[in-house]
Length: 234
Image (tube, rainbow, N blue to C red):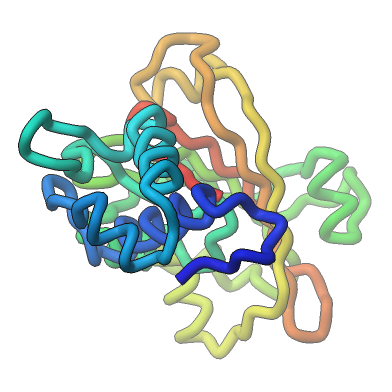
């Protein structure tokens, strides 16, 4: 059911509910969604509301409608929640996809002003930094650049071809709150080369700030996603 008194329109609530079901693997690429009548009964809304929700999902490329057959999850869509708190690897597993990683760089470098401010260091003080290319089913999907606090300097000697969150968990590092911002950016030469897109192509930039339970900063992550290979939902 949806919340009739919510400030979020009913059709938007249905979009979110169905998108969640796609992201967690309840509906996989190629699966048929419930019929209009079934969705009306499931959510307790009008036919117009259901049609508005399906149209928005179709416009976003999340589903495809086949005349006389029904509505199906798009076969080439990798779904993520824009406010996702899980690791990239875990999110791919939920969606039935295979995540892999290529470590491009790992070493010490001078942080930019944003990273230095977050980590509480002077921009003349080197910090540990990694750059990784994340792939979904073998396709370059995200270019990630992380800057780490001194507490995580042991990562220099860890294999980051695995999930970073799994490595931290094995080392007993607990995660506290995090913040995430989202904006559109345009592919630099480096990003275009690694993600196999045209220079200045539109990309999605997430900046994650991860903290320990005590509130101490642990690392800041700049993640650039290729929007041709996945969809985000709010």
